[in-house]
Every structure is written in C-alpha cells, then in structure tokens.
Length: 164
Image (tube, rainbow, N blue to C red; front, top):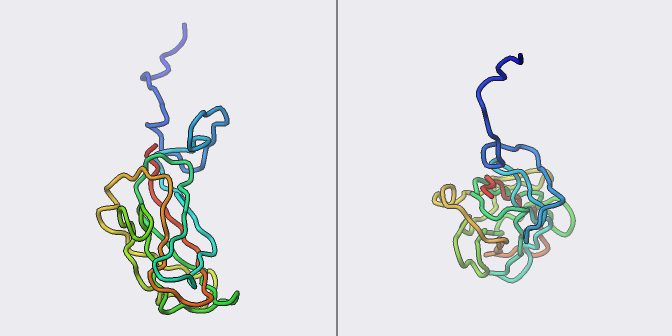
C-alpha cells in the first residue's frame, strides 16, 4: 500500500510567481507567446530614444507579452550626446499610456539632470503613485520628450508586475 503523498494541491499560472520568462509556443494569443506571470519583470524597453526631437514628441514602446500589468519603476540612462557619453542636463521625459502626454501618466515629464556623463548610469524616475496600484492594459506606452536636448539619446526601461 502506497504512503500518503501529502495534501492535495493544484498549481495554475495564477498561483505561481514566475521569475524567469516562460514561453508557450502553442499559445494562440494576440500578444504573442505567453510569458511567466505574477512576477516583477521588465515590461518594456526603448533603446536610443532620441532626445533631440521637437518638444512633445513620442517614442512608442511596446509592452512585452503582457495584457495586464502594474508599473512599479521606470529607469532612464545611458545618455549620449552625438554618440559619446555626456550629460543632457535639460532634457525632460515622461511616460504615458497615450501619445502627446495623453491617457494616464505613468511618469510625468521630469528633467534627467541627475544623470552624469557616464555610460551605464541610470536614474529611477518617479512613478505617479496611483500607477503602482492601477492595472494597465494598453499594449504600448509612449516616452514623451517634453524638453529636447540636441543630439542626445537615452535608454528607458519599464519594470513592474505582469498580471496576465
């Protein structure tokens, strides 16, 4: 006679915190393969965002395989001016759910002056307090350059919890 294996349990994707991405090649989802859920992870990334564009210009940043998520942090860094590490002291960026600083503000426009001229340096932008508790469902975010800095670029990383 077999021993008691212990209490019965059932595990679903909604009862596990998945730290590493898991893909399901058989998933038939509009957002693509399903990724691990219920864990803090990178939700979106924009490399070499042009800070030299006209004021109030957007860069579209697709959400990575999530249909519902909470934004917890937005990091901006790797600032370069004309291809070399440099400070873009007066550049101001924000992150929104619609273009032209529309929709819901994730990060309101803020100057990136705390970034020095060193590559691989990042600053955590202040996420609007309500966004840490308000689930988002848009499939792309907009990095808005509120104040430009000629010849400058930066990288933007959005982190949060995937609730899909």
